[in-house]
Length: 316
Image 1 (spheres, rainbow, N blue to C red):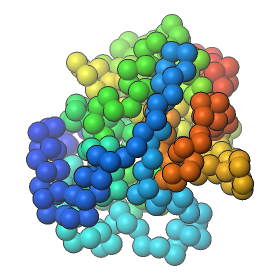
Image 2: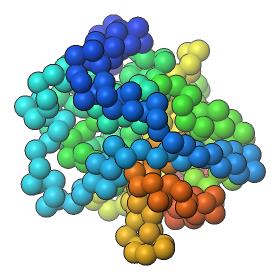
Image 3: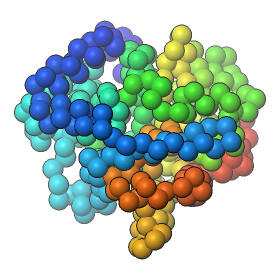
C-alpha cells in the first residue's frame, strides 16, 4: 500500500471510531474501564525504566498456544466471520481493517489485520506499517513476529497504541551509537546497553527505510532457514521523520515460562514488553518479579549488542 492507495484518515478519525465502539460494545467498554484499576510497578535501571503491569485480561495473549495444531483447532478471531457482530472495522485502504482491541494494554489499543487470512509476516508489509504511522501520528505502530509474541500468527496484522506510553520512545535516544549506516535520508544506529539488542532506523523517506529494512531482513534470513527472522518492530512518525526500533530475537519465550515452582513466571515478551512495559496476567508473578529477573528475560530472548553490530557490519 502506497500513499496513493491509503484512505485519508487522521488521528481524529481514529479517536472518533474508538469512542463509538466503546459506546456500542459493552465488553470493550468494560475492559478499557478496568485499565483504571490495573496495578503497575516501576523498576529503574542505570538510565532507563521498566514498568510491570498486572493485567489478568491479557492471559489470552500471554499464554496463547501458537503451535500449528492449536491454531488449527480454533477459529481465527481476526477474520470478519469470526468477530463479534458489534465489533466494527475502520477501513484502511483496500488491504487492512482497523479494530478496537477488546483486551487492551493501554487506554487506546487497536489491532490492524489484513483483509486476507495469511500468515503473520513483515516482508512486503514494512511499508504498510510506515504508512499507518504516518497517517496516525498520535499512535505507535508495532509488529510482533509469528514467534515473537503474536497470539494470531496465522493472520497478518499490526497493532497500535497511543504514543509515549512505552518508555522506549523516550529512552532510545540515549541508548544509540553513532550512526553506523547512512544513505541519503536514512540513518541507522545500534541500540547500546539496553538489555535488548537491535537497531534504530530513522528516515524521512519511506522508500529509503523500506530499502534498508529489506537488506537487513535478507541478511538475517540467510541464517534463519525457511522461517521469518525473529524480530519485534515499533514505529512512530513525528515532524516528517519515521523512527523504527527493530529488536532482534533469538528465542520465543524465556525458560521461566516453561519452568515450574519458584522459577516459573508467566511472561511471553512481545513488542510492548520489549518497549518497557512487561505484561503479567498472574498476580503472584507480578509481585515477585525483580529487576534482575527482567534483565535475565530480556537478555535471554534478545540478541546481544555484539551480535547486532556484526550483523550491521555485514550489511555495510
